[in-house]
Image (cartoon, rainbow, N blue to C red; front, side):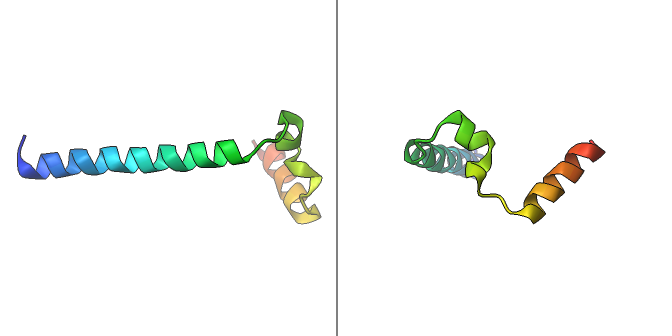
Length: 59
């Protein structure tokens, strides 16, 4: 491999490792039920709920 190709390859590996690490960190931090996940913890405001309903109607 040329130097440029090797740098790109290493950068991609580091990026994927960082993204996977962030995902694992937040996955372990969230010890909530699937019901709480799908309902947004019942803490969504009326604007977000209305926009979600409208987006669902459009699709």
